[in-house]
Length: 265
Image (cartoon, rainbow, N blue to C red; front, side):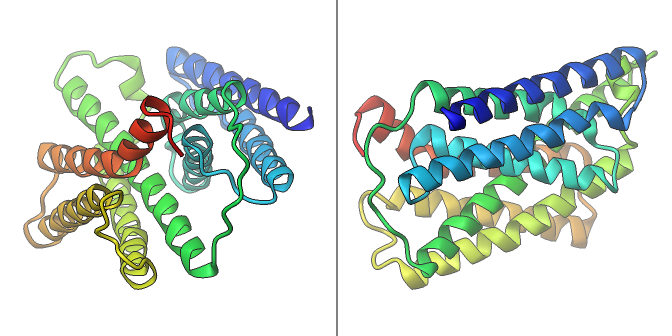
């Protein structure tokens, strides 16, 4: 009952913050108070996850539950970065997704008991994977906004949402900062997987391993191109989206098929 209440309140705060940010865009304003409900939503979201974990005596790694955990981390990263860089408008995309995953977790709870306990080695692997995915998810959203911004700046006059975003240089700088940090955590995830998982290329893991390595290669190649050749603009946008698509399929592809389509755990 308490967990459901926390989840509902969190969803409400996410949606309120989304509405306030939309109003800011329409009025061509940027107000810190519009992001405040997002902070409340995150802490309520965190309390919901904590309550569920205590009830289950473990973290639930079901499809919707893990999606909810990841979107809560994405929301937190957005809120933290916004303290130094004005990127609160990304909340227009992040907060509704966080609210949706939380709603799906409430509406489709995992009825199977969470029995599996994880060692610190596996916990390191799982946590670094989640953080890497979250960072690179924000990078992908940043790339989409960057593409829209570049397109709109060629028009006269550009749309209002573009006028409320930071400069192209700031957006690109943040994009590569997110990618660089994401690569670090993705590297930790892959290395810990190779060290602590007995057979990382077993049948049920091979596609995840291959796609994760492919994503690492794509993002590393992009970062090298940025440093060595100054890649930016459409090149950065396209490769960021390709790399994130590979990571998205690696993280959620098998879970979607096994848990929702084949109904297996």
